[in-house]
Length: 345
Image 1 (tube, one colour):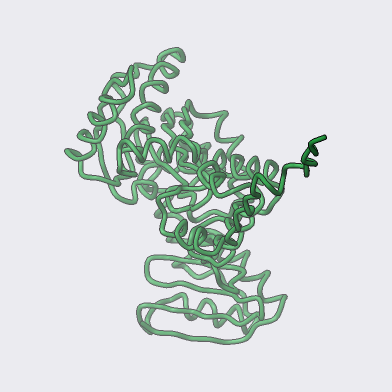
Image 2 (cartoon, rainbow, N blue to C red):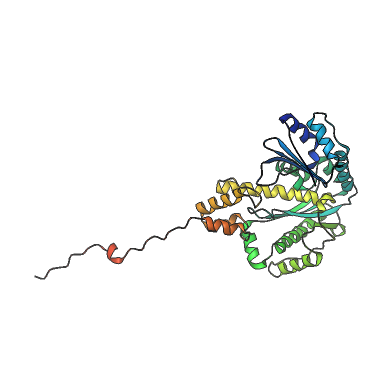
């Protein structure tokens, strides 16, 4: 791995943002990185101090020359930048009409899990490409908020949101996060197929692609497990289980964006309810500190309504809560008014 670091100015930042926009991702948590870019063979981080850290697989990686030109103000859009974006679009353009499934919120301590099944008609694939649809993890929350409503105009979708309280109840019974995800995806597919049929499409003929989180056999075992506890569960067929499916199937990419948008709305609702800024992710100190504040103000049981209680963070939060001393009990003699003993006459 080749590592290069250098200083840039504010003007350079703008030019890098314009050039590397197709590769912009959400910055890592608990860092001073303000902009983060990632491709298959390189990553680039811009810090709040305008220091840049570039990591590439080898010296021949063409991104190095691109950045050197940018920093020296000889602006060029490198061929590999254009080619990378074009390869992504070319992959999507070969897609058929699929139903894509993805979920978000799994790694976030706060909030529940949002799953989405999304049908992209073949005739609308080009429109989604023009909107900039790709894996939601590569988009900023601002970009997701901007395009999610537009995506909805060209797809049929269904979201199932498992809020924290339901997640924690499910987890007590199912004892497996994958089973909760399987429940959400299966329920999405049950509903979205009805929606698709209403639009005149043959829902039973459409292939379903899922961003894989479990082997096929295990996934169906999870669905069967859910069916034992949730009435009305009808097992839905998934045709393709594939990791990183959002980079190959635009229907999965659209599902990830729509699900992320809905999840962020739910986080905002929690912020309004508890009057506190809620950080995403799970590993930062801000996550622990925020949970402590909520539990201190609203009681430790409130954690079950805002977070995934099975996360290791819960133990840290509970251990940090102030111990409330029980009120001292008062004796009967202390609470009873003194009574004068009647004197004998």
